[in-house]
Length: 354
Image 1 (cartoon, one colour):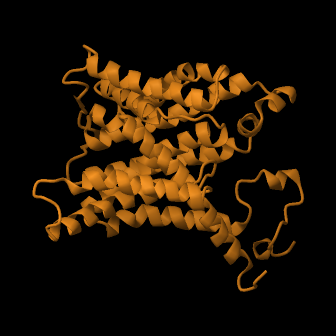
Image 2: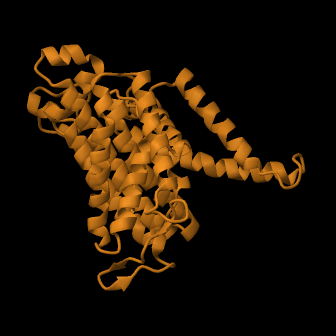
């Protein structure tokens, strides 16, 4: 066709076109525009706002890994924060000896090994029983960190100061520097994630999720596929944990508790399980929701309704988060990614109605 950017409807006529990453030239253009906007974003934000954006980017990396394990492979994982913790503590232990750009993949690789070990029970159990197994790993991780003689002060380790191209990263440019580092890592891992779905390994994940016996009959190895899903998902979480350790300047066990695992799972559900764009929409929605809960709690305290000294945000946050998850599961189980799909389909045919 002469004008491929003006096409509408299902215009893929070959398997090669079906496996392309970008369906149209408009998708390629929109991606480059988005990356350019993200590159110049720090020029328009303050330091406190950049901290929020950094947190969204780091959580998006962890949710990408969770979507591989739970969204595409169908393996319920309630221990994603523990894999982040494995990567964070690995980074803290090797950071004095390696540059940060080597520490990040090392943390991811160690977390991937832990993910393969944790995924071994998935060879025999599934669904709720597998969820309990990952929950057990989360609790075991917390106990080991809190009682390990190699970790002082109950698992608190300060991260060394980072130097890049001979310049030390100071307090003034800390959030901006790690924003660009996390953004580069996110783009690379997101590109690998998108390419994975085009390969036979990515299609095997979906086949095992839908029916592992049928996948086995078609020549796939469900056991190897499940271990691959756990290992790759844990690798993403380990890299995110190492980034979070550098960003927060310390590794503290409270950042990788069960509540964080539930929060990451909530981000995947709200964004849309088994969707690529949902891995970004979910973290952004819940992180911004948390900020609004803090604002709402301050507004409630200004009226003098609650007694003095009561932390309203701590009590209001679980209520709001739980309510949001329940509402999404009832009214929009496909998450925010479905809203994005509907918005795209609307503008694809615009200004025509059909």
